[in-house]
Image 1 (cartoon, rainbow, N blue to C red):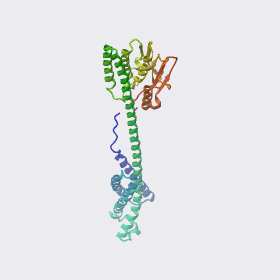
Image 2: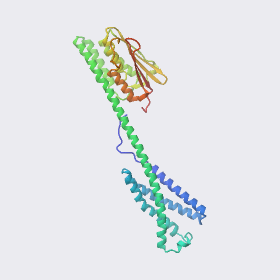
Image 3: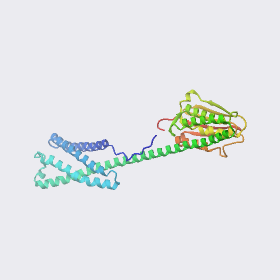
Image 4: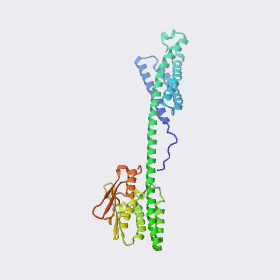
Length: 368
C-alpha cells in the first residue's frame, strides 16, 4: 500500500443533501394535503396543484439555502449554525411570499377567508406573510439542523478514515524499518565471514560467497519491503543464504527443508525467515565443532500456516538469557505489526542442544 493522505476531507455527497431536501418537502406536502382533506377545504384539485407549485419553489429556495450555508462547512460549528439561522430568514420570507401570491393573489377570489378579505391588501399581505414566514422559518431551521447533523457525521467518518490511513501508514513505516533492519545485520555477519576467507587465502570460496551474496541481495531488495511473497520464494532465499554460509562451514552445516507442494504458494511476509535461519547459524553452527542440522519445516494447521526453524548444536550456546536475539525480536515485532494477535512466535528448547522457533501465520488476504 502506498500511503497518500487526502489533501482535504471529502465533502458530503450532494445526492444525500438533495435527497434530504426532497424528503422534507414531500413530507411537508403530504402533511398539508392531509390537513386540507381533513378540513374538507373547497376546490381540492386546485389547491393540490397550487400546493405542488409552492412546494417546487420551496425546494428551489432550500437548495439555494444549502448552497449558501455550504460555504461555511469548513468553519467552526457556531459559525455554521449562525449562517444557517441568518440565511434561513430571507429564504423563509421568500417562500411565504410565494405562498401568499398563489393562494391570495393569483385567482384568489374563491379562496380568501371572508374576514381576511375585509382587511386592506397591504395588511393582508403583512399578516399572511408574517405568519407563514414564522412557520417556514422553523421548517427551514429543521432542515438546516438535519443538514448540520449530516455534515457532522460526515466529518466524523472522514476523521476516522484519515486516522485509519495514518495508522496504516505508521504500520507500513514500522514494517519497512523492521524489514530493512534485517539486511544490514545479515550483511555485517556475511562480510565478517568473507573477510575470514580472504585472510585465510580461500579465494575460490570467497569468490563463490561474493556471487551468492550478490544474488541474495538482488533477490531480497528487488521488491517492496512490505510486500508478501510465496513461501516457496522465501525458502529459496533461505537456501541461497545457507549456501553462502556453507562456504564458511562446508563440513559442519547440514540442511533439511520440508516444504509440501500444497504450501508453496502460501503468501508470507518477505524475509520473515531470514533472521531465524541466521540465528541458527550464529548460535548453532558457528559455536560448535561438530555437525549441525538446520531444519526448516512447513505444515498446515487448520486454516493457518506453521513454519518451524530448528537446529542443534546449542548445548553451550543460547541466544541470550531470555531466549531472544536481535533477529528473533525483529521477527516478533514484524509479526505483531503485520498481524497483531493473529500470528504468533514460540521459542522452545525441546531437549539439550536443540533450539526451535515456531511461527504460526494466518492466511494473508487483500485487506491486510
